[in-house]
Structure formats: C-alpha cells, structure tokens
Image (cartoon, rainbow, N blue to C red; front, top):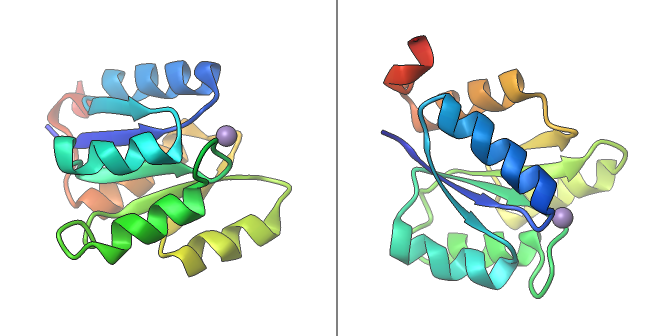
Length: 128
Ligand code: MN
C-alpha cells in the first residue's frame, strides 16, 4: 500500500482529502504545518508528499526545499497544492523543488492520477 504524507493546515481540506485517499486505497499520514512535515518524513518515509504551499511556521516552499536538500529524501515526489488563482505559486513550487502541482480546489480524479503517475503503481483497492 502506498503511503501519502498530506501536509495541509486547513482542517476541512485535511479531513476530506484523507477520506478520499484512504477510500482509494492509500495509507495517509497528515501534518498541519511545515515543521511537522519535515519531522514526519524520516518517521514515516512516505511514497509521495502532498504539500499545501500556504502553511503556518514554515511554508510549503521552504519545507520542500529542506526535504529535497536531504539526499535520503530527495527522491520522494512532492506534489504542491496551490491556489487556482495564484499562478505565481506554481512557478515558486517548481522552483522550490516540487515535482508537480495540483490546483485547489482539488479535483480528486486529477489528484489520484497524478499520485499514480509519480508513485508508479496503482493501489490495489482503487480497482474495487
Ligand atoms: Mn494552507
């Protein structure tokens, strides 16, 4: 089962995305800010990280930079979650080292497809 680290400070978004990802067969761990995200990576070793860019304490760009700067974790794909209206956020996300971005509000089908692309395998229960 692929493991997703979901970094999102908005409780409703966190709850909804966790529900949808778990229903699609992913194991999900959440972090509420950039510092918690950095701590969660070595503890959890996710297959993919979903990184909101607007976060308390440490924003998603800086958290991404720090994760990607650590050679142990540099290969973990990071998908940024960026506001639809903020085109500058996407360029900043890619500059920070994110592998791709998903615009909010998140289209769950788009999100699942991108996760499958970067993880390289479909979770078994997504078929059922
Ligand atoms: Mn946010």
